[in-house]
Length: 175
Ligand SMILES: [Zn+2]
Image 1 (spheres, rainbow, N blue to C red):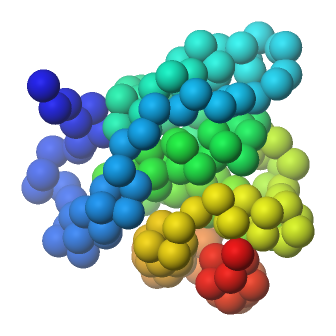
Image 2: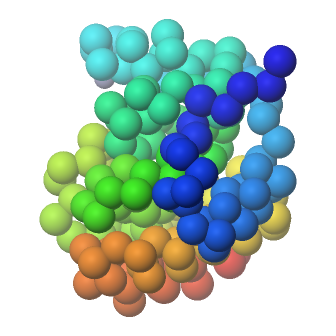
């Protein structure tokens, strides 16, 4: 039986958001992740491993995404596998101060300032270009659409619009 644990009530989702979520679903057919989720022995990372290993992004409970807020602390393989869960949830969350949206965008852009809050180090351009190579052209196009949506929706991200556009050009249009 298909289940959609990521859904907010329909009325809260604008039609643009719905189209974007559809685009993400089309670009990212759910695939179970059998790769290394992360390789850190600490308690937080162990919990991540237990929750994510051998699952596909559409099986991840919304409550888990709301707790994690972004795909920090994951290997590139796991970011590739689970990014659509974070993007979809961020789009569906109607909150004005949408931390999942912000942290997910930070994880896709090189060295955005003041992002000590999200777990993990801010990614460098080199690291992101390596990550981007795991994604298909359709997946990178969906990510570009997500980034564009995010800077138009979120006031904090609007302040970072130039960096986000740079990330679109240097990372997500290439790779
Ligand atoms: Zn750890």
